Amino acid sequence: MVQLSIILLLIYVVIAIQCYRSASHKGYPKLFFTLLGLVPYFNLVVWVYLLFLPDLKSGRQLGSLES
Image 1 (cartoon, helix red, strand yellow):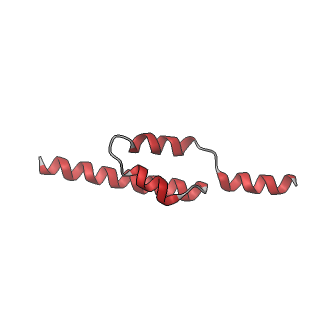
Image 2 (spheres, helix red, strand yellow; image 1 turned 30 degrees about the horizontal axis):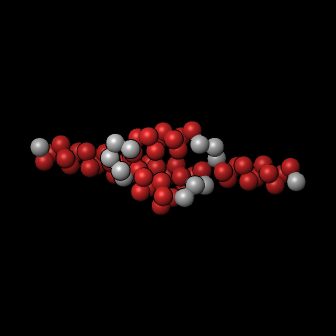
Image 3 (cartoon, one colour; image 1 turned 90 degrees about the horizontal axis):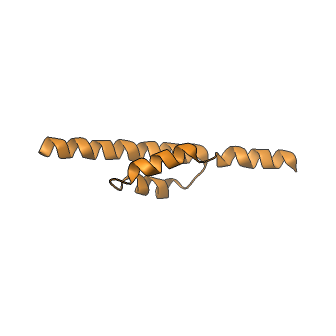
């Protein structure tokens, strides 16, 4: 039972790291999405949500080109 708990904890940490990386790459608040990525049973939803969110950094660059 302890081994299962450790494996689940490691999976949660890996998903939180992926949320951090996706949020920092796309320009979203890193701390907010990392904390949401640590919440059990909600972390996969946050991770998939980050995958489909638009990239804010490229949006700022495109907006500056249009002006």
